[in-house]
Length: 158
Image (cartoon, rainbow, N blue to C red):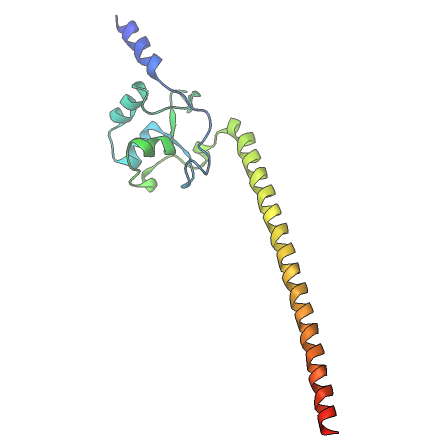
């Protein structure tokens, strides 16, 4: 009977493999262990585990740690359920938050953003060049007008 109950609760567990995009979670998404999730939200570990078992809080499908029992959740998903009160309360190091299989996806996001920034820089460079040419043209016109006034002054005195 206990096995059936555990299997039923495992059916509700939802999984997530990638961090949320910058558009979806502007604060910058990152992974938290269940213990760290409890610490940063000032909640009990059991509450976080219950949310995972009820399917309210998706977890990473890969188990980590020495005993391979450590589970992780996204900060973006946690923030939807409860406020993150103290990010410094987490005890997991930055190295512990790295997820190697997500690196290619993150690199692609960086490349895409780089291309967008390059296009924006090129557009701005063209805009600056156009403004510079416009300024030079107006300056030439101004000098031409100045020469006309000098010529008119000379004619007026003669």
